[in-house]
Length: 307
Image (cartoon, rainbow, N blue to C red; front, top):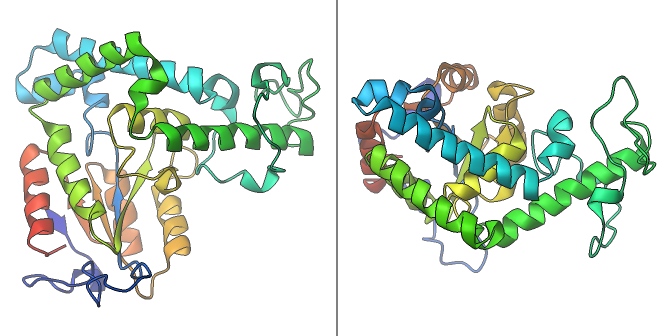
């Protein structure tokens, strides 16, 4: 279901060429970006939060205990990955909106062999402290910010290296568990993720359209979720934003500042009031996802060139 506001609704009822490229993408250079699809994550692309709360089981007549247990199993995998490989224990209290937000504090030091566990970095502590025995410095100071930036650079590298092979990152035992949980969730949710990834893949295959994620999940767990649900190939790490600190409208404003508005149109896809209200404020069309049929309809609209 698409709610259109303002000028962004032009082109309904006919094929739009805005994501086909003026020259069919035949030039050597990439065609200019013309459409940005801004996606919510939970309950839009993936079913996760409603597994934990049992609301999915209630809505679709599933066995509540089984569904909730699936949610817990995936939650364990998410936080295990976040803690083990994405420094969540270190950065939970100084989470960022975007992976590159502290990149300007990175001096480019070679991190080969760098011992993150022994550099004394900590986000904890009151007021301005948090230096720790390793002398990481005052929170917000140059040394402290540099060590924070190192962690986000390492996260970015790990995401890029394993975006299509997260099983190799988590190891054989966890990989088997992960594959089983993924399969069980997909069966229990009647292929919800498959329907969503068809839409994402269709957009991703276009030369001048992109997928961007804006989630209320903190950035680090969001990266873990994205990899574990097999979405790394359609969401480059640079296209993931966390609204947990600044809200969705502020994230949308950042995305517009990044990609521009004069030649680029935006479509918001989500299930919640947060993204719907933010889309309304930004005068973006909003596609509500509240059922499997909404994802099927979205794919059809994409396939027919209406979006």
